[in-house]
Amino acid sequence: MKSDIKKSEKRWIKPLPERLINKIAAGEVIERPAAVMKELVENSLDAGSDRIEIAVEKAGMKLISITDNGCGIEPEQIEIAFSRHATSKIRDFDDLEALRSYGFRGEALPSIGAISRTRMVSRSADADSGREIVIEGGVVQSVKAVAAPVGTKVEVADLFFNTPARRKFLKSEVTEARHLTRTATAMALSSEQAAFSYSSNGRKLFGFEDCSDNLEKRTAALLLGDRNHPLTGFDENFEDGRFRGYLTRPDKCRQNRYGLYLFVNGRYIQSMTLMHAIIAGYGEMLPRGSYPAGAVFVDIDPHRVDVNVHPTKAEVRLSEERKIHDLLYQVVKRVFRLSMGGTPIVPEARPEDSGVGQTRTVSESLRRIREAYPERTEISPRVTLDKLYGEVPKQAVHEQVPRRAANGKEFGFLGSASIEATMLEDDIVPGMVYMGQFAGLYLLFKSGEELYIIDQHAAHERVLYEANQGIIEQGGAVSQSLLFPINIDLPADRYDLFEEASDVLKSVGFEAEPFGARTVMLSAVPTVLTRKSPEKMFHEILSDVEDLRKGGYEIKKAVAQSVACRGAIMAGDRMSEAEATALIKGLMKTETRYCCPHGRPIVFKISRDELDRKFGRK
Image 1 (cartoon, helix red, strand yellow):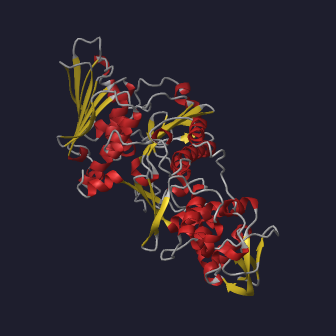
Image 2 (cartoon, one colour):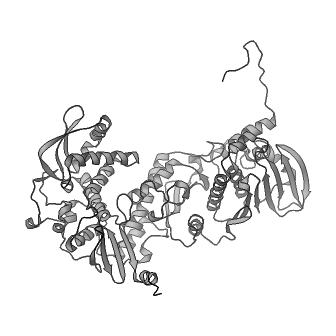
Image 3 (cartoon, rainbow, N blue to C red):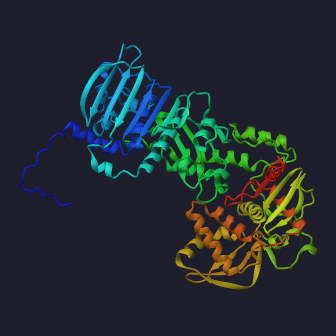
């Protein structure tokens, strides 16, 4: 924008008027009605309130009312509270370096008062009466004594009435109401010791009239609508800090991030780093594009947290942020590997061993699983193909083909077309009886009065995926040599991806070498992929790896997942009883048998009672 001021004109530097300063500050601190609510509720919490009532009208544009039973404000200080940079929460720089309060800037009240019609009534415990102050557009209209209970009530009406530009850029009433509800939910989660109620347009959306509910029940009530809904809890200490919280199982995931709330030292924040740690902790149990719901708290030494980053205090800066990310990732990963994958799918499983809705250490969970299932003496993170399937009798091989392992050892035929040859010598999983196949995709098993429906593709994909992970780490891939090598031309970006993934591709059984500018000579493929066109399969594997890399997967997991998906039994493939039994045995040896690498469920169980209810017998 070109200035209209000429060089010859004098330009005097003068302090801005206080009212203009407050309006400018309000533009930074008060972005929308939800920001007003957040600032006022945090003031209530800083005042020691254990009962907070929130009421809004017209998505906060008409009225935002916050009532608390905190310590209140002394009568002679109520006007000072609306002065810029006036606060009772910090005194010097040392306080700023180790904040233990929500507020500290002294900007919220003057900013709110500058762009609304604000009324505050407050009374301290030792005052004979309360004090009321009314401010419109930053100008004090009246201050007087009134009868009032101990605590503070703030009413913010006609928000942005004197800043029409800001009001014009607000979203629809429905959108702003959604932001208000989300903020109210976060405030209720941040202080489980306080009773909260939230009403919109005269309708009570939620309320906790007492503090008898613990954090798990409050989280379930707010996020899932059922205070008794089971959640997976964790509570683990680390150096100078602690992780705790409750998260939903992968099958209760959502299509957006709005159900996941993050807190650092009780402060509701936005953090892509911590969000990534939690989602990555779920790993392949979470379908792509889905997100968990829950509340996660990071309690850490205040000296390691910088809250003074943004006027809204919605973002914080952590020292050693990468380390905290990695620690949180490991905690979530361990908890869900044990609660979801560490428990067998057979019906003998005891509910108390599922890990759902309980907070316990990882070692305690592992001990309980081993006590319940003494035959599982070792829970191994990786299983190699030879351990998973064993040696194959020659007469069981349907087609003899040249085969070799990456380390030069000979292996039995392990193609997906010959699962019958992979039968283990031990007995089938106790209590499981094969019933048949449905729709060329689902395997039916029964145990007692329960019916198990198993997705054959997802189950086989899980088995191959974990086997591939073991192969990549330990070596021993089984390859089939092609009769004639194939030259494959790749686009430039795809060739770069091939160079990056070449070592991992070789470890799972691909023999591919550069042969020109952007040409690859393919001479062998993994045995599990022999039924398909080698050239087409190679292109599909690279395409899968490219997509998974964009989704944040590391190269080893991406290759393992793609080869497993492409090599697994497909829908429509017929399976004999022996093949189905062998597949279930292989699945039972995996670390995570709850879902396939894409996050889709593998097993669905229907009880006799459920069927009886469906048919009206109960």
